[in-house]
Length: 282
Image (cartoon, rainbow, N blue to C red; front, side, top):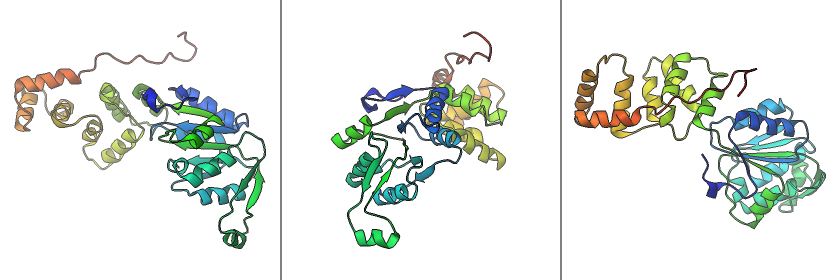
């Protein structure tokens, strides 16, 4: 979960995909003028927004410069704009000044770019223009580095999306259909600190290549002797604890006592609760 000191003052923290979808749908239907969605990578923030917008937005991602955003805002003026994975933009002085213009509270906003007017003229772009574009910013990290960024935060709805591993797993189960991989991940969710959809996709690639996909999943959770024990416990060719202890010793993990100590720490304390089925009471 996100640490409180990393959560902006005005942020709303949500940990369910249904809550995230409520915000993306509210933006797509025109109820929200400026939305910021911040959260860990690989948790489906961009997918949720793409699904809600259904192609009806200008999508700007990657290493977008301040001028690149200005140019795109002119080309797509009055249309919804999504700035995706542009974490560095709000840390740049020119970038945050432009964002403050673009995300003003007024329905119609004046944007201006006054450096190198000859270049703008050659591209057919004015030094100033009006736009009413609603804006979404999607970022993996956010920090209120100065007063300008704080002012930007104050202009819109700041959403911190921080789903738990079990929430990510439930969402993955709606579109990822390799049950063997799903079951293996579920059995080890209690070991996961920073979960993402990429765990399933990478495991699937290795499985199709007939490679050790279980090891890849465990390596995203553990290291050292704990990883060795987890790999041994997941090895279908080892049918007894005696065989597993020997494999642990042969792998340089240590003695029998060390094996069982790590095995106890890897055991799930309880089975995560399941969501109530549709139509059932909570």
